[in-house]
Length: 274
Image (cartoon, rainbow, N blue to C red; front, side, top):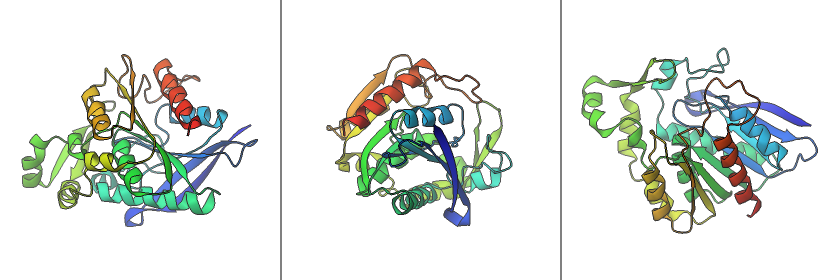
């Protein structure tokens, strides 16, 4: 039987990281996959729980969590609603959160190594982690970015410095979501450390790059750029797939969209070979 257990940790700025682990009770010592969500994402977005269940049914424990500044609260777990916390996020805070979750897993879940999956911005975070953390055995990125500044656009940086804040649109809710200047300042101050392409070149573990060729958020050329930075990686194109492989939020069906199912199948085949 498939079970899901929740946990909470103290993350950046003493904000709470809420997470859960999905597993099959017949295989409680199964290898552990840790999933890192993307920009404006969260652990219970759309199909994430179905994906976790799929991995658990196919021989893996699947841990997912909300980054501490995701803007998701315990009162509203299915939406980004805490805009003050969301605005105060930085890449360095997210990296610390991932460190905290990895440390928790290694100390409490009877593993000495883990597999990392990251989507979009979470893919960028996972690339940085995989280049530096010896406990990561394999990496999979889904629609990963190659530059954190692509999330706001370099053309907005002068406005940001002048106004102290910019806004990004939530395409689903049409809500304007604030980003404080601290996000940009942190990126500028830590540019080398947060350089995704540089980290991609340093990865020396198996890495599967999955990318749709109809992604308006992250073009297929970005995946090619990542693959070129690390010739040992494997690039897999999902034909006609968008940024979330046919998923949506909310998602009411009980089966995965065909393209996302393909992503999960290919990911598990990759992990099984490690």
